[in-house]
Image (cartoon, rainbow, N blue to C red; front, side, top):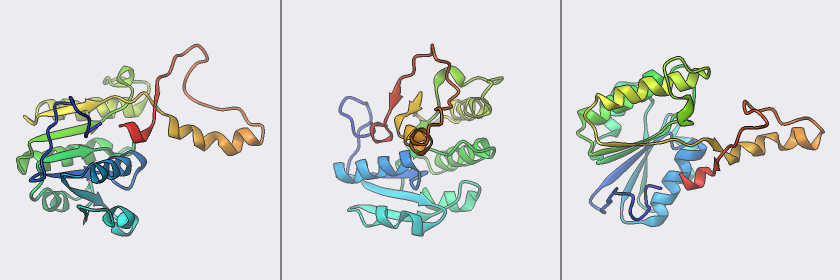
Length: 192
């Protein structure tokens, strides 16, 4: 948790944190937690600012228009930012998108970046899950950026189980990539 005591991440009101991916489940939970904790200014990056309007109504939260694929918009969003929370959907453009954010953060001399990855066991170049390979490439780029950072490795978001509700209610089985014997540590997006 970015706000957790003992996390090593010290936040002061003179600082601004940019939350990238703020209209998603994890990013919006982060923005709400930072706003509720107080003592910091929060910028939320949104491709469609209307989707982030509810976040913009929170104390000390500013919605800024930007797109992971638009380097100029990312540079503008980084103005005055000291820390970045980076969470992106697993999409084929993810490597380019997150590396663009990392590059903009480096250019803006951001002090610290927190990146949400995926299950650590999947993060390697020839991962059977394409997104595992994407995260590996992004993390190598982050390693080489010179930025100070933390990488979070959530195994599975329990919030995703809600997507199975209608099917289970209708009698359908739950389909996941896990084998019956796998032990899975689930986390809520609210706890990231």
